[in-house]
Length: 85
Image 1: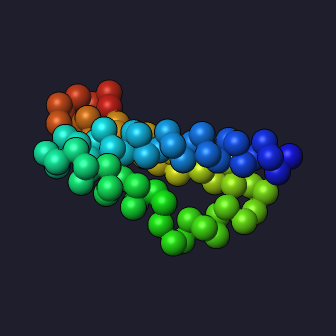
Image 2: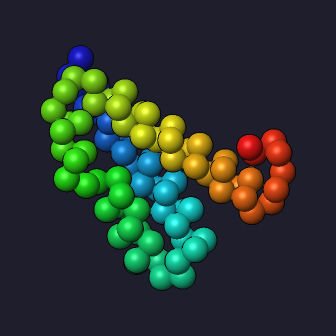
Image 3: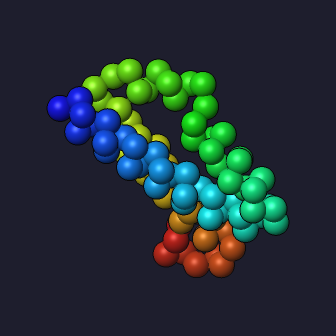
């Protein structure tokens, strides 16, 4: 169970970094800087605590869900379409 949760956590961590990098890249023109910002937001000193528990896959899924919700809110702010809200 721990190994499966670890694999899920790695998957959703990388997916979160990729999704956040796409959002930040719209506002920051430097590709390296936007990647560095997204990595530092997702992989920070406080995330180490999440990786100690068996539930780390579910916790990283919740972080990915929050980033996905932020993408919909960002699209709403850009296009003012109420479907994104």
